[in-house]
Image (cartoon, rainbow, N blue to C red; front, top):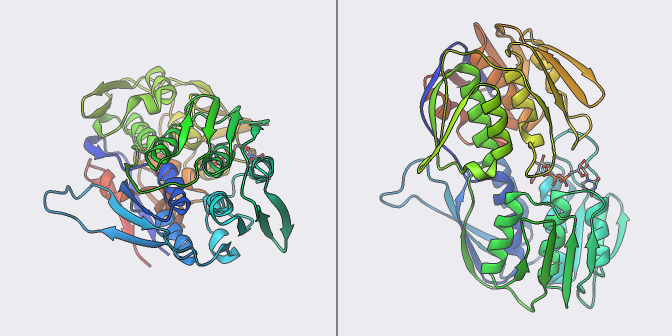
Length: 429
Ligand code: UD1
């Protein structure tokens, strides 16, 4: 299994290109199941999760062509996928595929909407809490699907097709909103989703669906209205930049000090995180090409932060912020409100000497002047990268083991960081 070796202490200086957002690319690829015409997606990141979803879609009979690089393309540009679900040959998503990636469960929405049936294994994914799918099932039932759980599979049927409905989510759910949105595009009549998630990735998917002929308004607000249409068609869409990758590298620069341009980043996608970084003593300068992040001289100020649905501070940056606060000048408080049990990184950060105690949903981090490198183990996707951030500033060598989680969500991490002066290498085998 691959490992990453990091020798800490170098400041980061240079440019880091920001990739397309994983959390938009996955539902966009899934949305291709809604039409028998070709969906072309540009700026798709080269990630293990994307490759895994290609396999899952392939199993349904979807044809995916990854276009090669064209003359003039920058080596860092994401790939272009031509996705054609002209013939869906199988409406079952089996356990061995779905268990590897939670988001693949979402294929249930386009399958039931277009094929009137779906059989999808209950999902796996990052071990960051129980992560049920009850609200996704509730949404599909409201739209008229008949659902039973059988042998670990969710079996959905709607022989006469779906019907528009009022769907009110009792809590904000990104997965629930994606599923309700996709399914409602082909339902008969109007659907109104209330307490919808407002994440930028939802807006990106809604934009793409509208290009395909859907009639969606209000995406990005808590009330989304979808007028069902009979059929969706071909479209071409560019995946928006990854706000979590952006925030992660911004935190890495805050941790090591230095001056880095995050090329292609869009500040409005992560304003709350940028505000926290400013409070922590980092200088954030949005410009025409992205966001410039600098920290020179001054130490890191402690902060008090609670995760929240968009536009609040993202849970997917919680672990990275904790790594940063491990070296703050005082005590920080970080409260996790989205996922219970999303603190697996705490014990690994402690291996660097970080002083963190847990009080229910809140972590109290007593900053120390310097972390020390150590062998550590990656647990979930975002926790893994918090260990990389800690290692970049720690004294001496760190070996990050079990890095396959990193490859699920961060494109060419070690290349991007070493181009900015980090001592980081992948050790294969
Ligand atoms: C998505 C993101 C993930 C991010 C999360 C929160 C993708 C591929 N993943 O995950 O990176 O951390 O949003 O921003 O986009 N819940 C239920 N019942 C359900 C569904 C969810 O109780 O049926 C709960 C979850 O356990 C959690 C909360 O709702 O406590 C939010 O989950 P949700 O927003 O759905 O997260 P995901 O879409 O799984």
